Image (tube, rainbow, N blue to C red; front, top):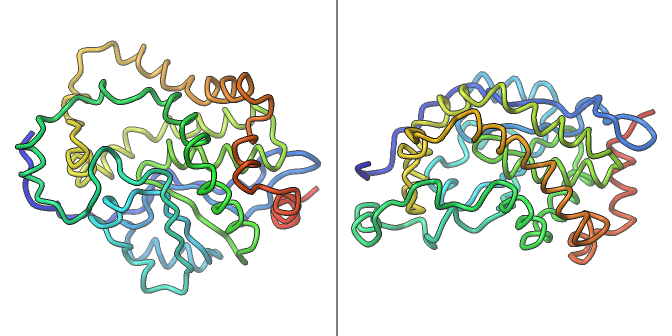
Length: 271
């Protein structure tokens, strides 16, 4: 693909936004209006921003890399009374280290790789627990101590958002089946997500040296690829349990405490 200047961002309503209210956890369910998981909230419309604030949104946790934030900015929510927390689960999508780079120079220096060169989703999810546990703990602390609803998002609302959702649900005592079901709820939205983020995600991935178009045009069996991807969260939980017993062990080692879990439960759980 050809790399040019930063793309024009098309504003649209989120297509993978859902309230975690009603999700079963230990001794109850998550209260409606506590936590929302979403696709990109930096590119929502003015009307969507107003609706979220009217419905109780008070804090946003942005899990995206600084490259992504640099490209999209914060969008209409910047002008609303909403606390913003940038808690990236990875410094960059790929090897890029600064957002102020010449995209054409990146392409000239290193030909674009295909997405097949990236780690599997399972490996990516496990690595977030193991290499970014402090960020996950920080995000949980924000949710525990913020009034109103807290929304957390990445670009698609699937991978990094799914990792934080899994950490939250584990901390609240949800079983693996519940965590997997929450993760898989994104899949019916994938086509809409790709349409919504397409105006800039090709650019973001190109900055990391990956050709998203080549991946989408792959001749691999799409059903086989989808089935493998859908198993990623189940495989992640199994791997973490095999390595640590308790999947939250890396987070405990990074500062997750009983007091923080109690604060989360006080805010989140209703009978």
